[in-house]
Image (cartoon, rainbow over all chains, first blue to last red):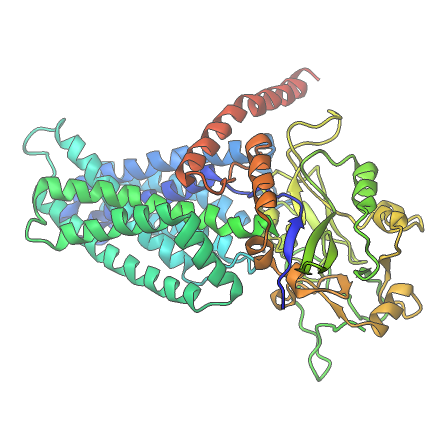
Length: 302
Length: 292
């Protein structure tokens, strides 16, 4: 049978673009950084207490950029508060929950920071637990918001929140290690964060990388053996048009090279740790690109 | 009669989350407006597209309804087939459950509608719609008094239907290919047609229960993936040109054959460039609120 050729059709724009990819990356790095911040005050690992505030401030700073991106990405920026109005709020819409999380997460971190500065262990722990739940939920939401669309074949996977949270964890640590390295230049010798501790964090990042590769492998099999839409997403989007952010940026630069560095005999070397951190932080952005923009690509031709 | 979402025992499987009214397809005592499109009668004249554009003043570059065209076979045995497309006014619309401000909702008679005054332009509904039936009204529009940068879609011409008229695309269809009516009314033309003919819907596996039915549907033209893989080179280039010359206000376009990262970057530049305009609009509203 001869196949047909499509000779005319309407042209459609992809509805979400670069600002959303950056937003997903920022929220993830913020959540990952805050998890490290909580090690000392929430989980009681004392050697992490000195970096709690730096990690929290980094998490807050990254999250402060988010509203700028999200509000100006709206067609009607002045209507952003509709998301919180009782008569407008829609409980079945993931974005309705997301808007509450994005608002409450930075506030909870700020309260946590106040108690950390005051040295109030009990309240720092209590508010820290709340902030961790909100941090994870905020980033869980970024996975869910596109996952719950059965027509978006690449995004419609229950692995989405896990992929996002794992990416958050490793990019947050990567970003934080770079910030701590810069911060050390401005601190006296006794206040500097030790390289032993930073090397330990890099090893946590390595475990996260291994888990991320495992999740990507599951997702790879799902799309390779998937239905027509999933396979098209695999063959045409991920392996072809978005091969740079998917294969090179995320897998090679963001995961494989850092993994090799962090399991090698020189894994405690400063340069190696910093290089791996930068590559992971940058590489995770590749996942945000193919997830958001690649997930929408095929359908623009329908 | 088109299949309803009931199991063998007659139990109804509701998927009506959020503010949408329950699915009414085949439910006695309710109305369920639907459209049957007889593809055997469509001649591809595009008068439905023009009528819709004229009815609503839809701006350039976006469509509430459009007609997809394909050539089948090999010379000299070729056929040209057409497929009109529009919002499927699903019984269980994904767009409605995902709208964060209740801007889009399902009318009790089956129309899926959009409220511009509630829409924040987040485009979640466009992401959710499996049928590409929604669009963001572009910033540049001939009539400046009409809304821009909110999401728009086909309304099944509810303003005409409520006055006893047919939707403009149906009214103007020269081949009589589009048939509209209440499919729950057994005496309506659409119900009779659905009972008599074999019909197909788009993406039935998604569970949306579309209210647009195709008679004589062809898999080759109805398939989403073949719309991508079986494009002519000319159509591919036309779309690329469209993306270059008519950038969307959503900053997510990627032009095939060019660097993906270049377009990721360019989209961000376009996003930043549009902020002053949006800021100006915000300023105007604040000024109006303060000074009246």
